[in-house]
Each structure stands twice: as C-alpha cells, then as structure tokens.
Image (cartoon, rainbow over all chains, first blue to last red; front, side, top):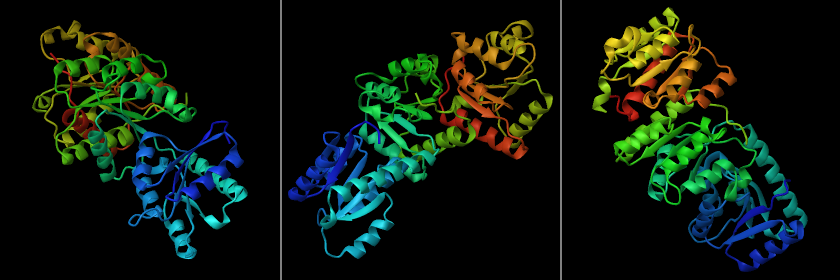
Length: 287
Length: 149
C-alpha cells in the first residue's frame, strides 16, 4: 500500500456501529486514515461529489427506501469504471439473500456481517478490495474525459448525455480554472492522481470563477507536457472575440453549447465519435 | 452553420493516388464544399500566403480546414505545420494531420506543434469514406470555425 492516508467513507445510520468501525480502523491504520461518516445516502452523495474516496463501507439498510446495494449500483453507474470499490456491511440476520445481492451488484467487492467484524477481518477485506481494484483499474485503457464547467446543471446534462450514448470512458469534472490546473498538475486536492495517465480530452467552458477558461487554456497550451492534450472549448458564448481568442490560444475546437438536450446528445456523440474513434490521441503520459 | 457550406477544404499531399482517393471519398458523401489540393509544403505555404502561383487568390477567403500529410517533398508537413501555427493569421485555421505514419513520436510531436487533430490514413476506401464523413461532419456541422476573411 502506498504511504498516502486511506480515505474512507462510511454509510451507516447507527452511531455505535460508526464508533466501532472508527475504533477498528484506528487500531489497523493508526493515524494513516481518514474516515468520513454519512448517516444518510443523500449525505453520502454530497460527500462523494466533494471529495475523492479510496473505498466505501456501506450498510445494507440505511433508510426505508433505498438499500446499500442500490446506492452502490447508482454510484457506479454514475462514475463508471473509476468508481472506488465498496464493502457491504450488514447486521441483519437474513444474510444469504443479502450476500447474493451483494455479489450481483457491480461495485461491491466484498460482503461482511457486522458480527464477524474485527481488526483482522476488516484489515484483510480492505486490503483485498484495494488490491483487486488496482489491478482492474490498470487493465482499463479507456482514456478519461475531463470537463471543466462551473455550472452544475450543465455538468449534469453532459453526464446524462454521456450516459445516453453509453460511453464507458471515465468522465471527471472540475468546477473552475484553479481546480482544472490542480487536476492536470496532480496537485492540491488531486495529488492522489499522481502517476496516472492525463485525460485524453478536455471539454472546457470559458466562463468560470477563480480562473476562467481562457486563462487556463493559455496556461495549458504553453505547458510543455499539457499542451498536447486536445481541448474542445464548449461554451454558451457566441461572441466572436471568444471564438477568435480560443483558436488563437490553441484550442483544438470551439463548440457552442446547444440549447436542447437532444442536440447536446448529438454533439456529445459526434465529439466522442470523432476524438475517440477517428482521431489518434496523443498517448497520455503520467506526469 | 450556414456559412460552412461554402468554406474551402485544402488538402496537402504529395501522393496523387491518395489525393484521388480523398476526392472520391468527398464525392461519395456528396459534399458541396470546394476541395483544393497542393502537392508539397512550398505550394502549401504559397497558397496560404496568396503568393507565387497563388497571387491571384489575394483578397479571397482562406480555407476553413486543412488536411495535411506529414511526408512531403520540398517542405514536409511538420515544417509547414510549425510555420502555420506561428503565423498570427494562419494559426487560426484548423489543421487535421492525415498521414500514413502512426509512429508515436510523430503523433506526440505533431500535437506539440499545435495540430488540431491527428488521423492515421486508413487502408481501405470504405474506411476512408467513413473518416472523411466524420471529419467533415465534425468540422462543418458541430464545430464553430473561426471566421476566414
């Protein structure tokens, strides 16, 4: 295992179980882990969109409607191949049916009953989970597509468009120019990506806070390693000066965001078809 | 998108068979846009600068898209690419390198020099038609091109 602290998210509504697991993890990892606790699936979703986790510990029954397996399945559908693995936990007596469900759910690596939870079983299960996940990740050679856009609705729409065309490539998002540069340089909140291949394609909005798309584009196309990455400006702006500035700074293409979802799907389909199937991308090299 | 119907597509390729195949592919997809050919890097730069044999084109719009082979005599595609992307006016024109080479160093170097895309020439005509269809659809219908006055 690497020297980096392990980032764990626990979805659990029973505070005692949370304390127990926290204690076990402390015994196993000392100070080299960070445990976030979500006592609802909604809170879990919030945390997942804000932060990167190495692994999820998910209680099977967290509320009356959704089950832990449903939550993992939904998350995995959203994040695709890059979704961190989950370990399903349950204190329920009817273990057999849950175990079957766990095995059928994509994203669930292992299943553990709370009664058999101890430092040894937990350490071993986490270790096996992460080891399997790493080898699976490395065999996937799909390039990651990175989208930089400050508008959460637009990000969601593009995500939906990707889902509509059933694209398997990992899709990452950043919400402003600073996060974009940190992501590409594998620094700040993105140091965990160090050593992994750079995105194969960037979809770049121009109007973003903290550092706008134009500035970021300029920086990227000046940088010796990053300049090779194809950048498709995808913006609402119809201003000619934005068009000229983008191509002048080296944007590979400039596309105006369509207004309807159908048109967006069409554009995303054409963009991915062109860049992933027709074009030969520069090989992403780990920085 | 309406202005893209009349933009000229310029292809720079020294191989007459390849030029003919691309012409056929364009005919196959019934593209209305004018398709112009140059045979080497010197012709390419003269054409773009509206000088030499191409002085008569002065004042007319520049091509909206360039398909560029890398291996050409007199001045190869890499040198021409470098010159074009250094020129304040010409750099705006999207360039799609269309070449037989799939060597990693060519790919990396070409993107480094600022090509907009890199495509390896396919072996079969059917594949070429598909590529030409997708390339023209992308650049003429999906993408917004810079103005080419």
